[in-house]
Every structure is written in C-alpha cells, then in structure tokens.
Length: 167
Image 1 (spheres, helix red, strand yellow):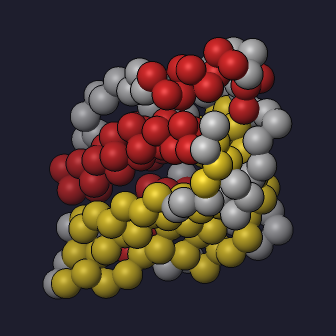
Image 2 (cartoon, rainbow, N blue to C red; image 1 turned 90 degrees about the vertical axis):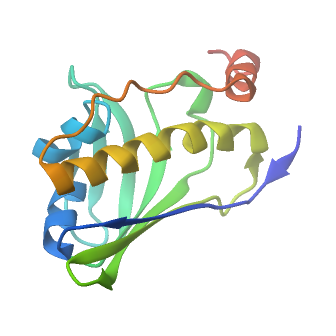
Image 3 (tube, rainbow, N blue to C red; image 1 turned 60 degrees about the horizontal axis):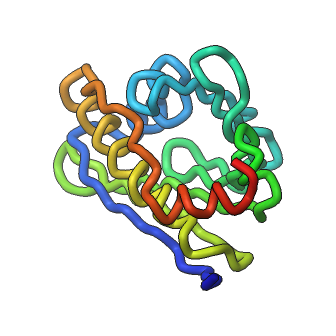
C-alpha cells in the first residue's frame, strides 16, 4: 500500500456568470441534474454543515464548510458516510474557486486535497467521478440541460481497496 497526500485539481471554463455557477454548486435543484441525482444541502457559512443526499434521501457525503465567500469560494471537508469501507478515512477537503475567465466566461477551479495521507488507490474514484460531474455542470450552465452521464464504475484499484476494507 502506498500512502499519498497528492491533490487533484480540475480547471474548467464555463460561459456563465459567477452568480449562476454559485447557484448551481449550492442548489439542490441544480445538483440533482449534474451530480448523479444527489441533492446538496448546506448552511452556507463557515462552520456550517454540508451534505450530499442520494435521490432516495440517504446521506452520501457530509462535511463542514471551511470557507464560504459567495460567489467566489466554497471550501469544505468531504467524508463519505454511505459506504462502510470509507467511514474510517480522514476528511478530504474540496474547494470550488470561481474567477473571471474572459468576457462572459468564468474559470472554475475544483481542488480535492488530502491533508492526511490516504491509500493512493482512493484517488482513482475521484479521478473518474469529478470529470463527469464538472462536464455535467458545464453543460447545464451553458445549455440549460445536463447530459445523463451514468455514475462511473469504480476503477479496479478502488474496487480492490473496498474489498480489503469490508465493502
């Protein structure tokens, strides 16, 4: 097993405004369209809670908001609570930074940090999921409709990890 604190970063340019992007990142009516049907809930202030709920209402992700500066920065801890194999893991930190990217365009930077070392196989899950999520977000904001992207099948390294940890 190799441990890592490696971060994952994605940068995407979207033809929208910071306010519309913020609304899509923080509103359930939007998140359910591009985040595999999940509803986001938050107490949109530093110290508030954030949750992603599955379509049936069960909690999938929970965390604490570390920074909330609408419509520019949202930073929060990320803990998978729906899967027993992941409950023991240290919190990751997810950040969305929205900046001007040109005329009528924003630059969205999404960062997944791991301050405490984790098994490097775990990075493969986010690396298969985040591109689909961000692509759906971009399509939704630019066209008004998100493509129906199926949740990615967990990559083999992640499946191996889950088997080893009781999934």
